[in-house]
Image (cartoon, rainbow over all chains, first blue to last red):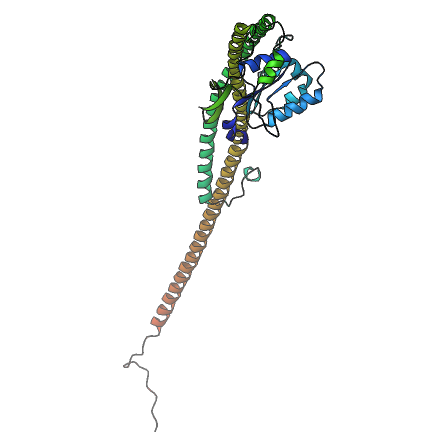
Length: 122
Length: 256
C-alpha cells in the first residue's frame, strides 16, 4: 500500500466545520498556518452561506496533503458532500465525522458506521 | 474422464507427478495458514468495530461538553472570540505521531497525540475577560481531540483491516476452489496416464512372451520332426548292410 510508506510525516489534524467547532479545535491547538507565497491553512469554516463547491475543493485539497493524518469534518457539513465521503476509502488521512453544537451526532449517517453495519449484515 | 477437465499443461511423467504432489501439499498448508490468518484478522476486526461504535458514542458526549464550554467562553468574554482565535493561529501545538502495530503480519497504524510546548498562539486570547474560561475550554477541547485521535486510529485500522481481510479471503478462496481442485485433477490425469502406460507395457510383454513361446514350440516341433526323420533314415540304412564278402554272390569276372 503506497499510503503506508508516507504515514510518518503526517503530523497534523485538519478540520472542516462550523465556526464554533473550528474555534474550539483551534483553541485546543490543532491549527497550523504556513506563511509564505502559498500560505495554507488546515481548517475551513463553513457557514450556511458557504457554497458546496468550496467545501468540495477544500476537502480534496486537505485529503491530498501529505502532512495531514486526520481530517475532522462536521457531520452536517459531511452531509453536503456525502457522495464524496462515501467514495473516499483511503486510509490516510482518516476522515472522521464529528458532531457540532447545533447538530447532534447521528450514527446512522456516518459513512464508516454504515460500512460497519453493511459488513455485519445488519 | 478426469484428464479432460481443468488441469495444468504437464507431461504425464513420474517427475511431474512428484512435483504436483508437492504442489498440492504446499497449497493445502498455505490454505490452512491463510485461513487461520483470516480468522485472526476477523477477530481483531470485530473487536475494532465494537470499539469504534463505543468511541463514536463517547465522542458525541465529549463534543457536547466541549461545545458547552465554548459557549461559556463566549458568555464570559462578552462576545465571540472566534475571529481572534482564527487570526492568531500560527503553528500547531497539538500534533499527532503515527506508530505501527503488527497484527498477524499486517501493519496497522495508530495515531498518538502529543503537545509541543514551545509555542502558544493564544496567550493573549481572553486576556481582558474570561481568561479562566478560555483556559478551561482549551483543556476540554484538548481532551476531546484526544478522543477524536483515538477514534481516528481505530477507523484507520478498520479501513486497512477491511482491505487486508478482503485480500486474504480472496486468496483463501482461490486456493480452495481453483488451485487445489486443479492440482488434484492434474494428479488424477497423470495417474491415469501412467496406469495406461503400465497396462500397455504389460500387454506388450505378454505378447512378446506369447510370441517367444510360439517360436519355441515351433522350434521344438521341428526338432522333433527332424529327429524322427533321422531315426527313419538310420533304420533304413540298417537294412542294406555292407555286403558279406563270403556270400554266395559271385563277383563278376574282371576282364582286362
